[in-house]
Amino acid sequence: MKHAIDIAPFGELSDPRVVAQLAARAEEKDWDGFFVWDHIAYRPPVKAVADPWVTLAAVACATSRVVIGPMVTPPSRRRVHKLARETATLDLLSSGRLIFGAGLGSPRNNEYEPFGEVADPRERARLLDQGLEALAGYWAGEFEPLPAQRPRPPVWIAGEWPNRRPLNRALRWDGYFPIGVPGPEELAKLAASISESRPGGESFDLIADFPPGTDLGPWEQAGLTWAVTDFGPQVTEAEVRAVIEAGPRRLPGGAERPVADTGQVGVEGLLRIRRERGQRDHPGEDHVAQFGLNVVPGVRDPLARVLPGHPDDRLGDLAALLGQLHDPEQSLGLRRQRAVPVQPVPQLRDRCPGVFHARRLAAQRAARTRREGV
Image (cartoon, rainbow, N blue to C red):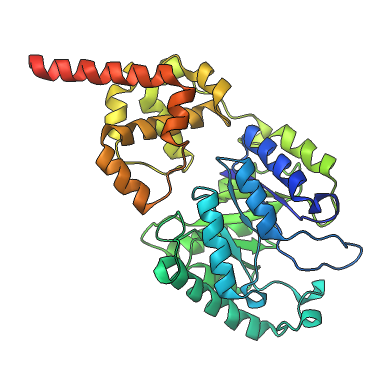
């Protein structure tokens, strides 16, 4: 299960610079995602409301690993062609880290009728479906530049539980964010229903939000894939920062995630850890595993000092990158097809020259072995 911070960019947090600083710290503290609410206005006493897309652009520039996105955007009150430009641009800016959360929205927040937007829920639902299909078309090539993620950024659909229509809509996309699920037991039933509806076994996320300090163990066991820590509409920077500093609770009971011993597990173990956390595989990982013990044992601590995030995640990213470097033509094709969530090669080479030297030595030893027929 992954963990994210979700904030309303209101009040103290309506300054994108503040939100970007919080996101950068969340990345350092090993959170997996950082999301913001999408509103034009909000009910009293909220007055100051930041634009979510400008805020997310600041977050994208301040981070390099966490996924980001709006939770959630109602396409019924957005110009879909403008939304397509915003999402594709943000996905490129973040190197393919956008998750697009969508839903009906709520008219009780004074942001529909006062601005001439549709308030009828049936019409908003129709515009939601129409908007999602239009976005998919724009992302597929009707607009350029294309998003970094191919064929498109993931789409999560939010909806009030236990309404069936939002779930049916979500099953056509990549994730479901049910609002108001009463407990882990009901979530387990929902997870089973989703599995039955998607027999192919394709990836599908099940997301829920919780106040800080919730025991997430039972929810993870019930099948939750993303736990989103939500603070409500009125929260201070200090309150959010305190939760970020505490870090995500990776295991039931609040235990911290164990840190892998690089000297014992090697790259094969690190790649396994990477896959278990749901991180995307890259061509060349099997090759890296074969030579892994000659490449990165003993570099975990130096790597932790120069790259942000959890050291084991950075080693997994490094292993994937080395696999791409093994076949430059394949690496180029991969970059054209999908985002590669690692540092650009020149930057990483400059920051970790010893690792790349070790990789060259390993390749030279392998070539010498082949020549000698051993």
